[in-house]
Length: 176
Ligand code: 5GP
Image (cartoon, rainbow, N blue to C red; front, side, top):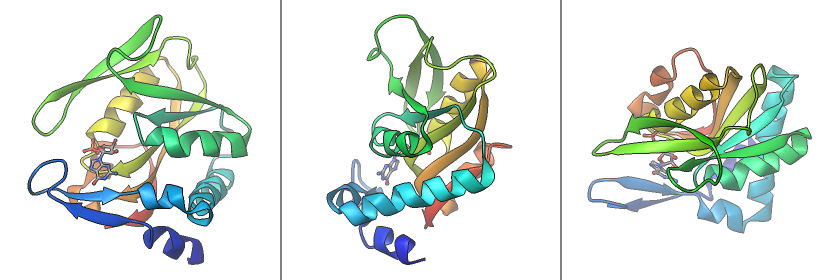
């Protein structure tokens, strides 16, 4: 609980970002505080070691999943692979399109990043409607790999994103 407090003190809200009416949760102060950043990694690691003794790969989502995912992967002694917005990754990729609130988006992963049968954890900073994490799960499943769980720092409970993820468990450190 001490670690959760340390992290929650580092989350601030900016209203009307990126557009009017959105209360944006800013996680940058977590990165600025080495103790808070270590607390995030500690809590993720503890949960994974308790619940998922066998993990093959950590996947992080563009862009803030890249800040937390590799730290966890290093702790677990496994590799990391990025899921990126369309057009950013070289070589053969797999892609999935999904809808955002007002637009369509496409997420991509390198074809050789994950292989069939691997057990994967997906990391992002925040779960809102669940559209982004759901698309990421689809990409992993396209590769016939298994998503053990999604790990996020913040979950906006009132948007019911975890329902969209159906049977994939979500672990969050802080809920609003
Ligand atoms: P969803 O697809 O669940 O609706 O939105 C989650 C995605 O949007 C995540 O990749 C997350 O980084 C980003 N996002 C949406 N709202 C916020 C917010 O308030 N703060 C931060 N840091 N990211 C957000």
